Length: 217
Image (tube, rainbow, N blue to C red):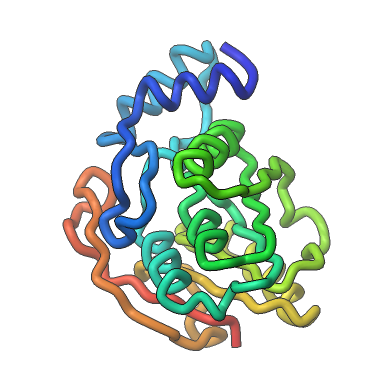
């Protein structure tokens, strides 16, 4: 199994197209359980140690951020937007639906890039996809950076925050959706909105996650 076409086929075969709980205007190819899908991915690719299938779920922080964007389109309308670590593409799709001039969904997982393409097509929006690790480079020249649920590990959070602050210094607006992850630097952020987000116990050991949207101060 190799190439984008095969990954797209794998995603369609192993997920269900469903509306996102907090953002029913958008439908995604979603899996019910993470571990079985993860194992199946490794089996079909014949490769161990692959990243978890983050692309197969509508994470709480991403749902909150997508809801905020659709309810407050002025945040992205007519602007150039980057969805960092896009996963399923939910936030990127929401930005495009809210009137963003163009949206780039970046993720280092090839499955995520395939999921972005499929989900964007299902929702009839145009989203560009990028597989580079943008944290290894200077922030691109975009007007808005969107980050959904990425502060779950300290090394990632520290690296990410340093990069986001550089983006902010360049004049880029930064919006973050987060369900209370341990490594979110709240002292450097301003809260914009709060949501009760439906999630699955398989992912969060809860049915509702109190999630917030933050702006980089």
